[in-house]
Length: 246
Image (cartoon, rainbow, N blue to C red):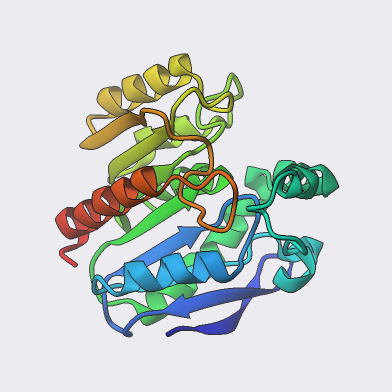
């Protein structure tokens, strides 16, 4: 349905998947730690089918191509997901600090706006991509009108650059679907996120999906939970309809 394109990002050329009809309301889709791959493209196509143009950039372009960084095994098989994450995945996730991701976001947003129609756009992110989605909303107030964050990790930290602090600068509506008993987003962090949303006066949904594991949207891994994944799609579609009119 879509195509791979190249974007001139802050530190080189990055691949991205672009799908949907030009001129439709735009959605910037931030990948999970596993990266840009067919599963992400399938999810982007589904979002595009609702009447959007969707851009999913290869945020790890500094570390290699999407194909080079993609899993070689089937992450649905016992031990394969764990082995993949033990191969240095979290090193490149940790290296994607705001001083890198924010200049990149300028390139992603510029490209999305070249293809999207007039009006606000949305960001939606998975796992560590939820952090990027929130930060981008704070970076582009008045442009980002909706943010989705799904099984996000590390949305609230003690650092001065904690992602949740970007909410105060944003003008977006938010929807979060947290994985149940997620060590990367414990209950106290969900509560702190709720407080930040309320303090900023942002319309929002901030829910824990009972029984859903971290990574519940990803059908190409052992963490997939169909019920939670479908719930996320319903919530995201409703959010985009309210905020973007798609």
